Length: 154
Image (tube, rainbow, N blue to C red; front, top):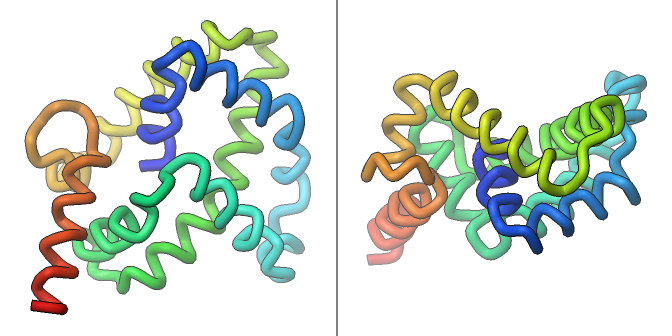
């Protein structure tokens, strides 16, 4: 889901440039050197919440609800897992960008390929989350989250 959302954001030249700026400024990959202690400190979740706000915007809650619905986890647990994973994904992406010397266009191209692989790797979950088959799970997760919330609140 995170790679798909990042790939979608980087599909526009402005989005790719903004992502490149964030990677250059804040995500050099060093987070990957100390994952264990960061998990224990709660630092990943705090940073991840900010990242998710940038990547998913106001869709964050609906995405967590949709993933929870599809996986059997609660929306809260799904949101916490996404928040812990987001800095790791960004750190890995920053490291790859640096090692490959990728500019904004190269980053967008790589993410486009990663987005396809991520969607394929999710197997049945990707099919469930991309219900309309347009390659973008975000809109479908939003619909699922809206239905779930509508069912809860009548």
